[in-house]
Length: 90
Image 1 (cartoon, rainbow, N blue to C red):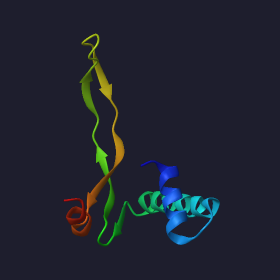
Image 2: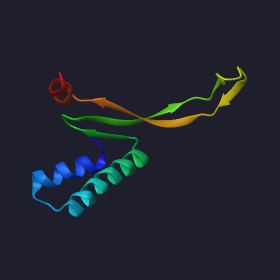
Image 3: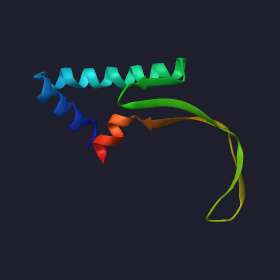
Image 4: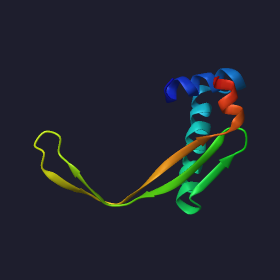
């Protein structure tokens, strides 16, 4: 499923137009981003938790040449599914 499939499913489930459903999806995603930027974590009870994690700088290798390269430190997003989500998938 991609974003447009999700928009279509939401539009069908809620009797909204696809344009309005797209606005809702965009708003949800935007607010998830804002929460992660400001708080570093977003908990959706029953669904899961989005959290930021810091990766330290490290040395890697270019697989093509074998040359060592420096991989800079970065912040990434992690997702831990909640019990209800885990149970519904199994």
